[in-house]
Image 1 (cartoon, rainbow, N blue to C red):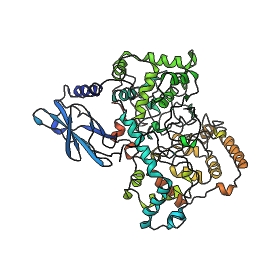
Image 2: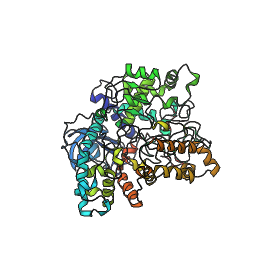
Image 3: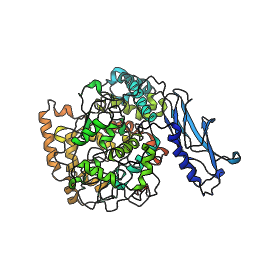
Image 4: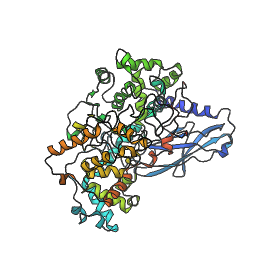
Length: 604
């Protein structure tokens, strides 16, 4: 289990029951007019679905909950959690629950949630759906034409099915779904609850002004902040998240955009844009997307040694645990360890500083109330690993629901997998080979010069949920998918356009700046990047004509339409799944919780 505990299932879940009962104390709202809320269903196997929900607010006297699958009652529980162990393989089931009080008085029905179980349990779930392919599909080989716009609407399904079959997308999707189901079978609710509270706690920052959620909030950009350059410590209003969060400095101290947290547990080889936390193993194509027990490598010998000596090599959380050590000790992000014997000494100082109010949560998660940084890292990693969003219209299409995509989206998919060349770098069900590769992106900010660009060291992001993860690039330089696609169409022209037309001033974060202030944000990055691009072109054995793809306006539109089908609707703000990832705005155990507001003061 993620919590590495040996309690029985009943003991592990009794806290949820007690917590639910506490909600009903001293309440007065009628049960007949209330309903359980935020029901979330998660697939665990071909026949198991885990359900969780919130008790009705202000209701007393609820003795149990009735569980319904597809309109039929299937069980009863006194807790706010239930596992349906008799679901049908490969079937979409719809669930809801009702509270039951004395005298058989029942509450209103909760919201419903529909999930599709795995088709079988023969997949061990150790591959995340990433692959590396050489070459691209030829549209004419499958569809009789090299022009996606010339394919008749009634021929699109047959054409796209052939392309996807040749690319092997269905088995890759099976691997991805089995991988996520394996994680969900191992979830520990108490550990996730502790991790959620820690992730939102400003007590982990040096000055009690920043939490992990300050830059990675579930309600924004799939677990980011929507900013080109994130704002960590010293924010003028530390409770603001996203646009409007500022440290009052023209050039933000953090030099990169915050990557999305959602699906971070899908990565099996590395963490961070620059892969500074990774597995120390051969970079063989056969190992792409495969869970490995290879040793972990980090920028600090103390962290590297601790991860490899104290954490089991089979622990599914270990990469996330290693990653969790570093934002805490980044001066611009959360805290400056320079006054301590070592960064690790600073981390233990932060752990020891947590007040006694945290001890009951640690006791519930670990069996005793001891607090140390490795336990903090484990709990936050369990929370991040629960942040999975992989269901989307394109995957529905792959599984036979052809009506889930429009004609334009299907044409965009055909173009993506064939002549556009996108699948060269974004193949497989995870849409990344977990490798680093160009092209060169525009650079801005405090890390705009020599920030790994000369080596093309930034890893290729996954495209899952890409429709809601703007701004794009390691520095958040593109606000729309269309602009990203235009960049790939003509990299040199795009770089010249970005700097020549001062597009930095058009980014939402910097629109309020003067032209001279925008120039300050760019700094020397423009001359550095344009010179580097010239060097790359000179060293290439391909002509400029071969590098320029020259996408038409229609082709850009089609690609963007397809890319937006890769977004899980439940990853969007306001969904029950996202709400479940956000703690109640109650200040947390010690009053230092990041109860986020947007730039207009609205609670998130």
